[in-house]
Image (cartoon, rainbow, N blue to C red; front, side, top):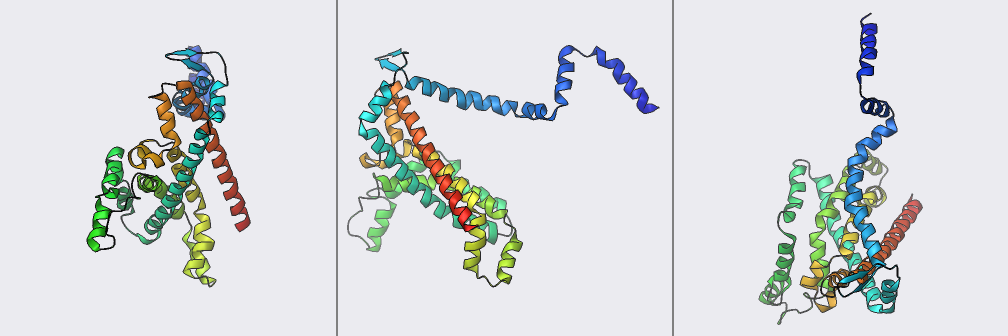
Length: 311
């Protein structure tokens, strides 16, 4: 009787709801609509912060510029200029190579740290993860300038090697070249590589390692056959998190790269800045994104083929 009374009361109150409230109540009864309603704030933010600027950039790449005025006539002139000057493509390939070296160095340095926290640390793992993020408590520029002090002509490395008698004169090849860019970027993005790998290692079922040991596998073979394959998602994620942003970096090459360490990001920044040629800068940025997308797709395809053959 009580339930019938509640239903009757609800039916009596239903007509009192406004049209908007009734539509909302009917829509929320459908699970897909509820899902889109929950995602809508994120989707709106991504649209405003990512899709719209990208669309503006692509549109701008098909315009031309006459001093301070934009000619909005659709034209491929900027892309023609891009391919006519081989310097752009050479710098893009060079940037991909430097970013590839940064990614490789970062992952190789990050994996042991993530492995140590996941398997060797038994208590206070949160403290270790916080310690990893300590360099991010300071400004990115300060960290880059710190590496200039370390790698400089009279820096920490040269002074230490001279004091130990290893060298007689300061080494000149460790600053203002691609090597300095790789070292600085590898340190700057280390945390972004450690955390995804740590998550993958932490999710590995320890009973699988025990089963491998019971079957006679040693520590090295257990790592190669069990731990490493199961941690590949973290390695792939960390590689992408490092490779994609560093390819377009222009601050670090500008500060520690010197003339031989310039990357494509420096050219894009110059086109938007000193050259004041925004359409050509937009076309260069679009081509860079397109080329990086191809490289990432090839990397994902290659890793997929390797994992299928190993499995």
